[in-house]
View 1: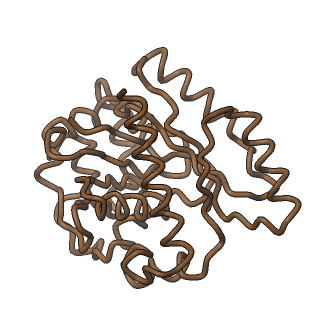
View 2 (view 1 turned 90 degrees about the vertical axis):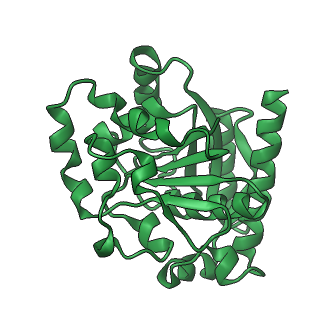
View 3 (view 1 turned 45 degrees about the vertical axis):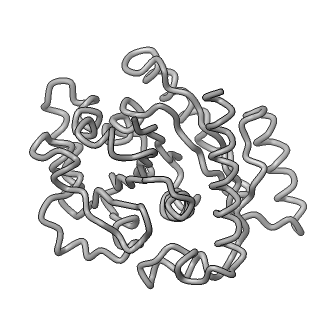
Amino acid sequence: MAKIVSIVNQKGGVGKTTTSINLAASLGSLGKKVLLCDIDPQGNTTSGLGINKRSIKNSTYDLLIGRANARQIAVKTGCENVDLLPANINLAGAEITLVEMEKRESQLKRGLVSVMDYYDFIFIDCPPSLGIITLNALAASDTFLVPIQCEFYALEGLSQLMATVRTVKRMYNPRLDIEGVLLTMYDGRLNLTQQVVVEVKKHFPRKVYSTVIPRNVKLSEAPSYGQPVQYFDKNSKGAAAYNTLAEEFLRNNQNREA
């Protein structure tokens, strides 16, 4: 039975998509079967894995409105053990369509039932907002992972995210828990970085990953080639960081299962 993890932060540019793609690729290389679910209308996870959004017949839009299930829209990627539920421009209209549907917050959960026994992990790359699409992700998930960039406004908006999580737990998904907080765009030479680390650990005691994701040119370049950084440049600092994160992620999950 797959564990479902939403990768969420309503702030844009914090590394949600980078983390979704590269953590999935690293886990896949470690022998875990992973499904990536792209529910961001920008579709960056889809294009970042080299899939042409315009050529997609069925997308996560069809999943959310109940027109197709996950088995029907899943596609193979060029990464070992990693499949994708792709997004295209149709997803931009999902919020409007979902408003009129009964049990609209449970559409994604229903759509994923058909693949739960096929994967070890399902990662949901959420849009940079706390609308109905993100609500669907949190209602479907076991846990959520929060990437936070090591910059001045890092914690801005996080109180709103945690308030949304509390609402989801109370109304739709009482088992929802935090998977971890990931520090991204890390530069240990900057005093500001150290200040952000202290503040984040204060807000999320014992939930911050030991692994940090550095600023790395290869991480920025890889999506334009439609590849995770591990495939684009396996010797880069970015690739090493996500491989280490995957190992820490698995250790944490083994400890919790034990």
